[in-house]
Amino acid sequence: MEEPGNDYVELRFGPRWTYISCVRKFLAGFFLIGLSDKEQAERISTAASELLENAVKYSSEENSYLRVAISRGRNEVHLLVENPADPEQINVLRREFALVTAAEPEAVYLKRMEEAARAGKQSRLGLIRIRYEAGARLRLEVREREVVIHAVFTLEEA
Image 1: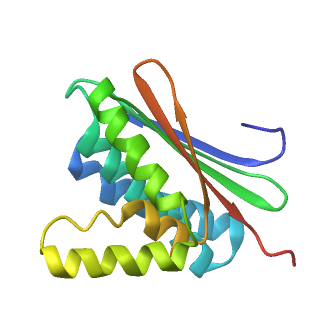
Image 2: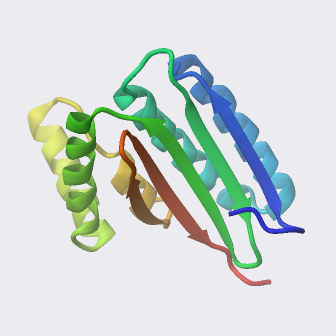
């Protein structure tokens, strides 16, 4: 992922809820400097936060790790979050991923909002928020006992 001359940062830490806010603030600042676009930096850091929340929630081991890596090329930013997961969790994620990528982002987002309002339980809005609100393309990579979710943001050319 890393290319010479491009902005790049990688963090690795335990799956703890308390780290998410700190990581989000750091990434927002990192990209605000690199992009000079507060709105874009905020979208990227929001996506990172959503992916990290999922990773903490579904991480298979308390003493494991989360890895977030972000690189910036000429016209895109590539964000990935990696975590270990049990086969059952991987299957849940595969189903969820298929649902949020099966249709246009707005339609899926509105359907999820409606479901959350009716059911009054978990919204399951994280991945679709990344597609709809942050405008990222998503890709799921499954390894033997790990999952990696990639979010790719196209940058406006100046």
